[in-house]
Every structure is written in structure tokens, then in C-alpha cells.
Length: 582
Image 1 (cartoon, rainbow, N blue to C red):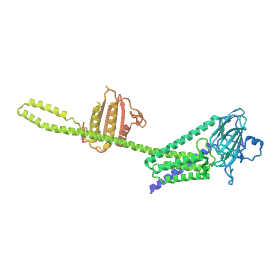
Image 2: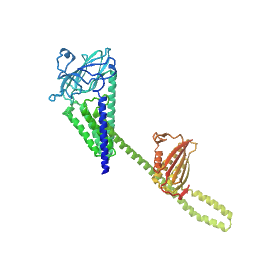
Image 3: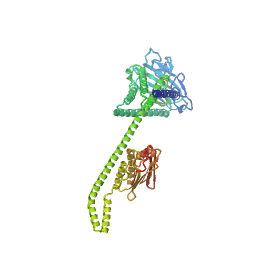
Image 4: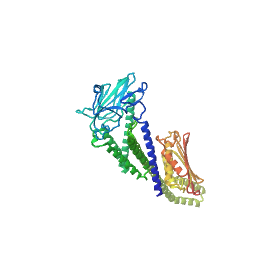
């Protein structure tokens, strides 16, 4: 019970710290990365006076004090002819539609935006960037039609939403008039701040935004397909929920921004907000219910940041980022990164398990193969021993006859010849009483004989060491396998050899191995690099891990074409009397 309370306190602390840090970060974004609060000149009653020297060196965000003519599609000529049209000054994004705050009015209709720019006296090229304008408009610059997106006229209305940049040559003064109409979109009119400046800076900002958006979308797609692959293989509930969340976010973006008729599905914008809040609340509750999961803290941080982004979007609605996305987009990106961390963790664990399984499978196969070779040698030696014992009776009869005839010299000659023949027929050598070690040593001795590599081995070790047979197999298997591969790469004519010495001293097992090699060791921060690929050597890492587990260490050196490994392990069972020398 105490452990559960401690865990709940920890999760509550993580949640609280994440909320504080997230809201602080969003507030800083609102103050420092916001087109509404960006430093620089702002219009006053529809007139913007630009600095004579610095006007072309920075971007100007035309957020406030646009002169707005509601319910009218006007041209510059119409404004000149009649100056009595009703107008008011508004900020971009101040209202969600063209109702201008009147709850009884329709958010759809038409209107005209107007601004006058006081430019430097020197004529130069200027650019005006208009993001999505809902849903059709004409733009006039200095009394001339600069562009048309869709058709805002009542009878021939045709909606079209796209990002555009309009350039013009200007000096001293420029008049911008934008006539907008909308009939059925969730948003109406100009909802994104127009940006004014030099074409180079405008295009640079647009390029950075496109690059950032493309990276974010590609990242989310990769996470989605990665999690989908994990779900197909594991059928885990979390993987399915992550994919549903990402797909829903994409569909929402498509329906709202690409298909203007999405207003049919969303009768009011609050429905979209409600969906986001319900999703955030559900993920938070579900995460708090999974406190025992290894990935819980990561997902908790991600979902908390996402929920805070929705709160920040509600607290500071007038936020249009200079670089990056809006609050919900930033929070969603953090949540996607959290999901990516979970995916990476699962993939890393799966790879680790697979790699461990492959290593153990390889070592098991090596043990079986070594034991099989060992058994075949023992069987052949036993058969030869039976034949020698059968032949021994005949030899004894000959020796007895020579003894009766007192032919001692002939008897000595015959006995020497028989002894030499006996030694030649029984050549099997046991290195030690540990069957696994003995089998592996004989297995690699046979491989060295086939590859014409000199193999020398001297063993002075107890039978019972307390070291697991699987660890002995991994240690000697990796050590001798690397030695054989290194010696085999030596050029023809150069010495090829492997020397192994094993001895027990002061309750420690000391293993020394030397072999011929080419090249030199490549060391990195985490260990020795493999000579077969660009990554870290798995064999040497496995040897070091086994040595460390038994309270020892492993050291690898090379000098003048000779590789040397020195390994020592602490014996868990002291047995200094039972030794065999090979």
C-alpha cells in the first residue's frame, strides 16, 4: 500500500512539474514568438508608417488596425468615389467570422480590408504574404488588381483557399485593398496575419515554415507506420490508440483546411475543440491508470503537454507563431515525440531480446557441435582402446616366449616398438575435467588443424569453478572464434597460431590467449570495434560482460601482429586440489 501511495505521489509530482514548465514555455512562446506581439511598427487607424532606413531589413506583421468595410466588396475606385462607406478598425483574428461579435448576425458574407503603407522614398520591390483567406478574395495594390483567388462575387461565387505572395514596386505610399467573401467555411475572412517585407525575407520565412511542416508530417507518418507495425505484431491496445490518435489528427487537418465544406460536419467550431479536450482528458486518465507500465512516465509527460497546449490556446487565442506551429500543434508534436520514444523503447527491447536469443542460440549450437565432435573422438578412441586391449594378449605371449628363452635384448627391442605403436594409436588428450571447456577446446583444435593454424593449449584449472556452463561456452566460444578468424586473415607464409593458457591462482581463474592477426585494434568510447563491420565488436563485449559479472575484468591488446587477451574471473567454488595439466 505504501509503495502504491509513493508511486501516485511521484506521478502527481511529474504531472505538476510538467504543467508548470509547459505553461511557462507556452507563455514565452506567446510573448516572443507571436506575430501579434512582434516588435516593430503597427498600423494606426489603417495607416502604417515604416522606418526609412530599416523598413526593408525586417518583416512587418500587419496584425492590427485594419480598416474594415463590412458587407461590401469594394474596389479602390469605389472607395475614391464614395468616402462615406461605413467602416471600423479591427485586428486580424479578432473575430472568427464576419459577424464582428454580433451573436445574432451570420458569420458568413463579405467585407473589404484596407490599409495604407507609408514606404521609403527610394523605390524597391516589396512582397505581401497572405496565408489562407476564407474563402475567396481579390487584392488590389496601388489601385490595380494584383491577384484573385476564387471568385468572391455573389452570383459567380467560387471558393478557393491557398497561400499566395504578391510582389510590387513601390515607394512613398502604397494602398492595399482586399475584398473577401465566404459562404460556408468554419472560419470567414482574413484569419491569418498578412506579412509585409522584402521578397527574400518573405520567401525565407515561407520556406522555413514549409520545411518545418514537412518534417513534422514526415515524423508523424513514420511514427504512425512504426506503431502500426508494432500493433500488427503484438496486438497491444496502446499501439492501436496511438495510431487512432495520429490518423484522427490528420483527418481533422484535412477536413478543416483542405475541404471548405467541412463546415457541414462541424456545425460549430466548439465541436472540434470538444473533441480535442475529450481526447486529452481520456489520454490523461488512461495514462494515470497505467502506472505500472515502463513507458507510463513518457506518455504522461506527452499527454500533459498536449492538454496544456489546449489550455494555452484557450487562454491566449491571439497567437500566430512566427516560426513553428500553434499551441495545439506544438503540444501534438511533443505527444508524437513521446509516442516515438515509446516506439523506440519497444523496438530497442525487441532488438535486444532478438540479439540475446541469437547469441544464446549460436552458443547452444556451438556447444552441441563441440559435444558431438567430442563424443565422436571419444568413441573412436574407445574403439581403438578395445582393439589395443585385444592385441595386447598376443603381445604378452610374444614377450613371455622371449622371457622363457632369456632373449632379453630382443624382448627390450620388441617392448620399445610396442610402446611406440601404443602411443601412436592412442593420441587423445584431455585438456581438463570440465566437459564443456574440454569439448570447446577440442572443437577449435580440430578447426585449427583443418585451417593449418598452430594450436597450443595449457590448462591448469579446477573441475568445479561455480561458473555456469553457458557462460564458459560464450566466453571460450567468442574468444576462440575471433582468434580463428583473425589468424585465418593472416597472409600466406606468415605464422598462424593460437596459444591458450588457463590457470587458477588465489581463487581466481586466469585466461590468457594469443593469436596472430593483421592490423590493429580500433577502440571507441564504449569498447572495441569489430574487424568485420563498422560497429562495436559483439564478441569482445560479451566476454567483458561475463568477466564483469563474475567480479573480474577482460583486457585486449595488440602488438607487432599479435593479439593478446587477458581475462580473470573470481571462482565461486574454491577447489585448488582437483587440477589437470594439459
